[in-house]
Image 1 (cartoon, rainbow, N blue to C red):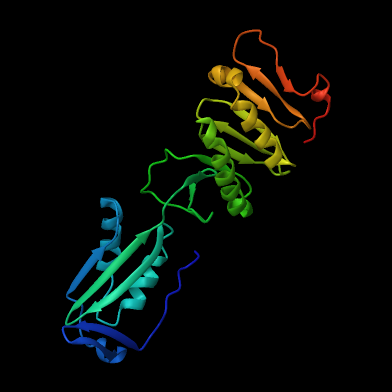
Image 2 (image 1 turned 180 degrees about the vertical axis):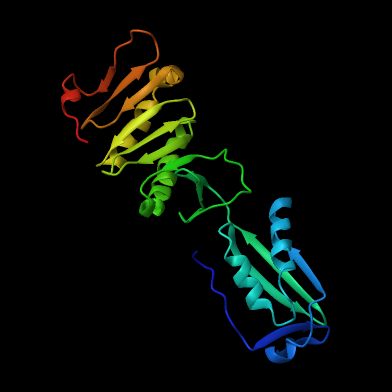
Length: 244
């Protein structure tokens, strides 16, 4: 996991009333850590896991690097900070990952597009799907599209990238949007313009599918029984100008 670098050092800084004192790590190893304080925005279950990990270690005041390595190895941990407080305490700060979206079958993505697993988070998040190596790209595209869509009052509930590079997403109103592989920014801009119009806005709850893979317009399928797809294009021939 990124940003998880366990550093081994022979020097530790102790915070005393008169200032900071440097003490050799080999000397610190002689002093057991009889008190361990855990800090961080953790769920009760996550804090319990941290205590369980620490309870299985023989801790002394030189154990900071080992504590950091053990906790940072947990996928749900973003970073661990350990400080020595003289004469017998370790202060352990655990910073958990912050999930922004679900990723594929059983992972989460953080704000940087890094995938991780965790048993401690609610799964009521946007669902992002794509090739494992494209997690960062999918997160970046999600943020871009969500920002563009915000002006219409809708949210992206699911975004997918398939193996051949085609994008599609679904909104919180149940509308499915096909963006295809190319010109996705231009297609999304056109979609937002159309969605902002009064005619579309009045019927947005009825829209099932919007196909934006046309050069100059969109095709829309409504939920009403027997309602044919409606072209919202600059001319009647636009539907033949599809580009994946």
